[in-house]
Image (cartoon, rainbow, N blue to C red):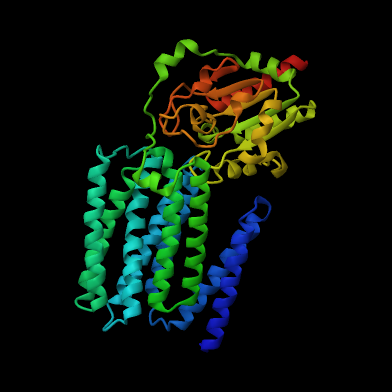
Length: 459
């Protein structure tokens, strides 16, 4: 294929990638952005296959069939609550692919210094992303709860591994036994990824997933330099840059630096159960009928969705209830915390799936000052993002993290299965606040019961 046509096709694909990321910045244009990105990737892959003068397409077809079947199986069996760990797994697969491609390119005779240096970056970042993403997947799913006891030991291990990585990179760039040294680099980098992510607590996993997503893009861009493929360089750079920007946004949302996430004060893991017994006597419980009575006299309600809503698959139920309340003249808004759920935008995706209008979704900065004017803050499965300890308790791992001011509403109704702490493992004083009542049980069942009580009261 003519080189000018190839470069033009790559330019078209890169332009589509840019417009895709722009579209993904808003829910209204996200679907269009996703389609533009898919079209750009189709063009890039098709042109690359034609330009690369593939001798045998049978292996490519077999890989496409196996990968496509596996992807379809994962898509069909993965629930919305498991989406974060699936994204983490995909990040790892992308990093692993970069390692394999860079290794194959470096296996050719006499690679250039640019190829050796770029391949080293791809091998290091890709292998780190692969192993780190597997750990993140395990922690998000609750299958992996291990954390090193000593942060100093973890840092020493990271330092020793870093020395091994630098040594391998220098060897690769010198051109001696490149493939062997690349294998050593990949192995040490895999261990580095494990040592980096294992100490991180569950509460920080959303930041880690975003960071590893950026790393997968960086590895792809480095592989593009190895292959001298402009489309791969541009697409990887876009993924890397957007991922690092998102990581920064999430760190600010949690008032934690990336250094704090990986090396500083640690937030807890899932399901510690701390603080449940001592708070039980102070909690005021309620019933669906009592909540319905509270709602009848309200004029404004702010709903705070959390991971518990995702677990209960209650997004459609809360959307239906919101429409019923609006029909009664009650204003209903949704307050979305940047790190609610297990993934950036997790709550937005769920509520969009339930056809909640975008105009009713407000981020933390836009809604926080209005909680004082709300008659009811209805907390549906949220925990850490409404924990007042973040404001008042300097010893808490959440201290300094911006939270939604649900405790400042006239009344706060919390729908939750139990008093167990959230992902950060921190007891929540909101549950025992004077203006808070707890409705225990599955969030979806509780919302259905509240809606039924409202219907009965109106008859």
